[in-house]
Image (cartoon, rainbow, N blue to C red; front, top):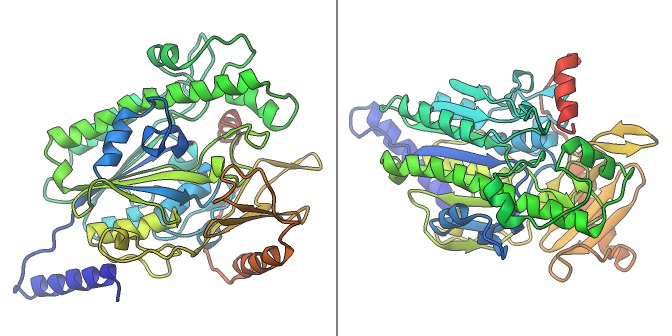
Length: 457
């Protein structure tokens, strides 16, 4: 019996005693879940980045547990966040594209039913649009539109300060008699790049190329209409660093409020991302299409009551594990049938499985014969071995992340037997019987589709 099972059984016993007048009411810590869209861990100081992009995130990481090897469920926002909130793979929750609405239980629906005040402030159409169902269960929610732009530069501007301001307003107005769950999503480090001029000056060197950090401009490089020069790639990475440093100050505002209000001691805080970003490591830019580490590896930081400070966990884990772990940390029974595991054995004396099979799916923005197609590739990970399969071409790529973390040497032709073994596991995953129950949506109206197009979707 696992530690998490024992803990949940103990909580259930307390609830029964309380109902009979023989015990105290169960105490649930508060929960804050922060998703930083498009954030690569290898650009954070806490994960070894040499430039000072993230001093406040790094300080937060030192106060809790840092997972170094985390795989996302999908390389783009909508299915990845649906997995973040449900603990299910995209094929299990059914939201693999813009044509389906999430109907599975989420952190919002479950924690609301458990008595939590549920609050959300998000900065993406993919999360905030009610069509997609990700904000079901939240009593108060704000979608801060992410397409506000500077009239002079025509670039989308950062909305992080507004997200933090509304989040603090929600916390100030909360019901002090109830625990709260606050879900925050920030779009700031996503293109368009509009960092604070102070941090642009510090991080970005002289550049005379044509790039301006605009998403629509970069799409031409994603579709191979144009080719990036080395100096273009350097400029993009430096602008990304400046954006992260700009966001780091916004992140600090949220933590400062938790500290100043006395909430920090009784609040679990989780920080993660939905996916990363390509900077020509495999001759691509942006995200959504591939499953290489620059896109599919994400950060995961946990801090709060019962979580030790300064712990680093190198065992490969998955975004779908976060949901079950958070249920355990706040003492709420998770829904049945989740794909993820509870990660708390990493700090409660247990052991996490090192060779567990991890998956990713639901890509989009692929071009095949001149047409946009979605969900054509799959990824499987076992230990340090990683298999990528293209359902259209039949190509299989095999990488050993231990010896080749940048995935530059495809081993498929050298290890055909191992490819066959891993592909058999992947086929079982692809053909397993699931009943996602996601609701089919009617076609999107022109305004909503135009907004997604502006964002590169």
